[in-house]
Each structure stands twice: as structure tokens, then as C-alpha cells.
Length: 124
Image 1 (cartoon, rainbow, N blue to C red):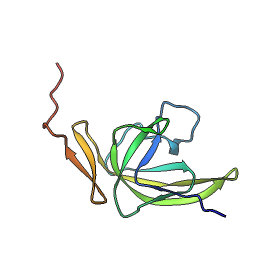
Image 2 (cartoon, rainbow, N blue to C red):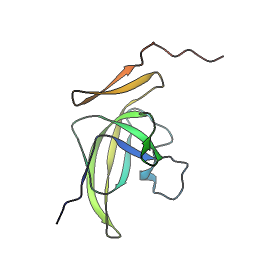
Image 3 (cartoon, rainbow, N blue to C red):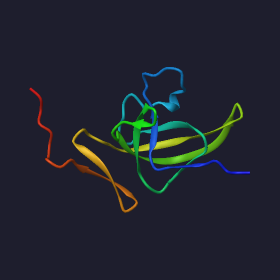
């Protein structure tokens, strides 16, 4: 008998404009540093509780948005709902990523830096 688990180094939640899911399955409408939110994902997900990771919005077909924030999973639990496994928990928003920042994966850690070329020019 096999064990079906998925190791996740990002948290990807749904677009809040897509109806039919629980609140915990959506990216919050407003992201604010220091806030804690609940999440729910199908399957048994394993998250690193010791490191920050990017929060993305899923665009469907496994396509992800740019990183929206750096978060830290503070709690994760596996459970069954209608005989299907799920993972639910809570995450803390450590930093909201601005449009002129990017997230890099280096040495097993995510880093946030200003995009090369400096600040974006304001549109007139």
C-alpha cells in the first residue's frame, strides 16, 4: 500500500472571484503583513514550518501568479472530508511582495530583492 503525500515549497490558493469553494481555499482579498489566515488544500501536503515560502494565486491548469507575499506556515493538519484527504492550517504573512520585487530560490531558501533596473517608472 502506497502513501500519497505531496511536498510543497509554495502555497497556491484560488482566485477569490471563482465561486464554489470555501474561504480557506482563496487568496485573501487584501494582504497585510502580520496577519494570519487559514488555508485548505486537497491531498496530504507537507510544508516546511521552519522557512518562509511564497504565496501564489493559482490561475488554473497548474499555472501560478507572480509571488504575492512571503508567508510562514504556522499550523498544518491532515484530515478526511467525504473520504478524501485534505490539509488545512494557518499561515502568517511576513512580507507582501510589491510589483518591483522578485522572489529567488537560492541555497534552499527564498530571497526577496528589488528587480534589476531599480524602481519602476510611474505611468502618466
